[in-house]
Length: 121
Image (tube, rainbow, N blue to C red; front, side, top):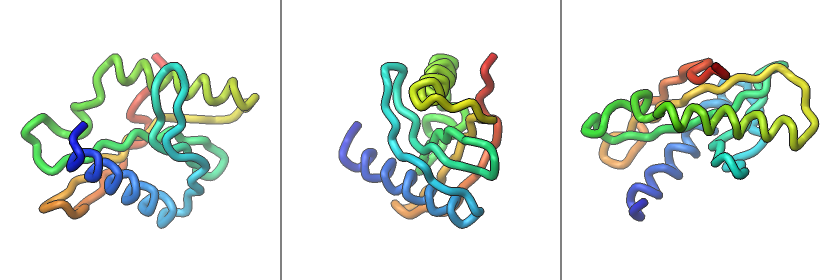
């Protein structure tokens, strides 16, 4: 990933965290890594643990943020979420959400929250 893409991604993740906190969520962990990949944000929404995939885009040249989550990425997110729960001995309600962050001229212009964007099946 190029430097500008990395900085845009970091800005998108920061905006996503701010969005979640503003909506009453608690950010538990950022950039959780395991053998299955990475989860951008782990957050608590009431009694539900939410694994959040953040996709940041400046244009639709390469598709929408939602379209960028491939079948393989979905499988890795589910496996990473299950690994997180098992590793920590948690037995709780959980789901995987997508936060699509849109930027214009390098600044975040909008955040779209898609609950249950990825399911176990």
